[in-house]
Amino acid sequence: MKKVLVGVLMAAMAVSLVGFGAKPADAADVKTVEAGKLHMATNAAFPPYEMTTDDGGYEGIDVEIATEIAKKLGLELVVDDMDFSSVITVVQTGKSDIAMAGLTVTDERKKNVDFTDSYATGIQSIIVPEGSDIATADDLADHMIGTQEGTTGFFYCTDDFGEEFVLSYPNGATAVQNLLAGKVDAVVIDNAPAQAFVEANDGLVLLDTEYVTEDYAIGVSKDNPDLCAAVNGALKDLIKDGTVAKIVEKYIPVE
Ligand code: ARG
Image (cartoon, rainbow, N blue to C red; front, side, top):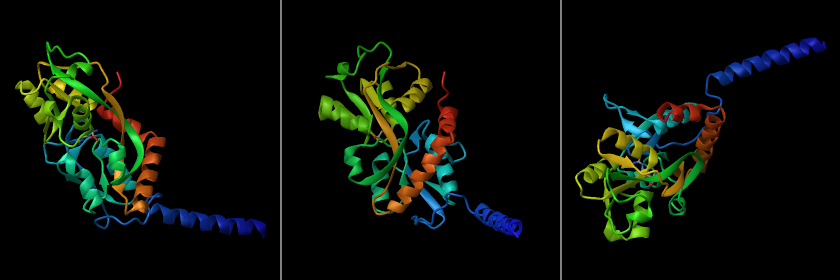
């Protein structure tokens, strides 16, 4: 009799396991801007975190991690590409679900969005032309500095060196073009894109100095704490099972 009962219970469990298989295990019934979709606000000019592909798609560390998060939540990822300075606003105003853009956690931004756990470290780095007299962050004083608008690099530089010495451009690539054209003496930008820009252009050097170290995380609307919890839960799982590390290493191989 007991054995029969155990058998019945096991059969019932097997059925419910099959039931779970239909939907991803972590799928939560969260509300998103568009049903069935997870909209990611980003600025896809920030290699290797987000960039466009030749066929008009998107790739990069953030895009791949977000794709995995969406999958876990039973959603399809949609990339909303825009100016970096808009990524938090569109999440705040309910036009995108998450801001994921190599986005640094700051106290100021915490007033506007909730952040998940951090999934990567960013370092504000300095690019100069070959032969420059700038060798450290302190040397930036009294020089013209190029930055990407709305970024932490812009805020640190204006605080430390004065607004009159800082120019901001719509994206990092434009800042670097202006460095090559001699319009600015240095560019301050996150280390991973800095490396990509230096590799793609002759005559530039990435200084071996860390101006500021920061944490990247995903911003979610304060009005949707369930979504933030679900996204963070999925992210935690992806960190734990090594998926995040694998994606990062695909784009930033460890030497
Ligand atoms: N980490 C910097 C910040 O949060 C720059 C991020 C720029 N990201 C981008 N996708 N363009 O301010």
